[in-house]
Image 1 (cartoon, rainbow, N blue to C red):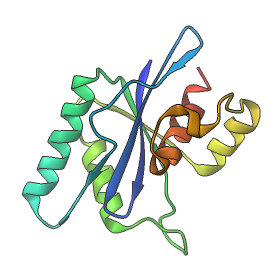
Image 2 (spheres, rainbow, N blue to C red; image 1 turned 135 degrees about the vertical axis):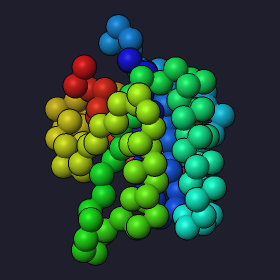
Image 3 (spheres, rainbow, N blue to C red; image 1 turned 90 degrees about the vertical axis):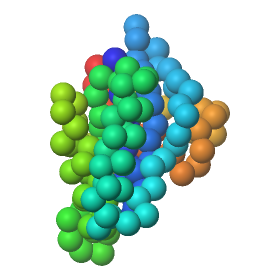
Length: 141
């Protein structure tokens, strides 16, 4: 199974592609590590984001998207732009989208700790949360 794990931060959608086959994880090369939304009030930019995200998923034959959830209110609440990006991803036709909470991720990592240091993955530091989300999600398969 090939997934795209997503962490939404402010006006960015940080992505990490992962696949699991025969019990082995793979991190395929990806042409982009994040999408940045300059103006979420511009309809054209929102459509462009959705199109570019769908194109990435189609090109890499991604089967499922996993989004790390954010708080809806309080000190650690996600931004309104982040929720708009989340909606744009969810509304891509034919796409399966799942969510993982921080508590779920911690629980999965406790049961199935990563056998590799993050720095050895070759990913950028800002992709760590997306990678951890994808790893925890695939750990249940």
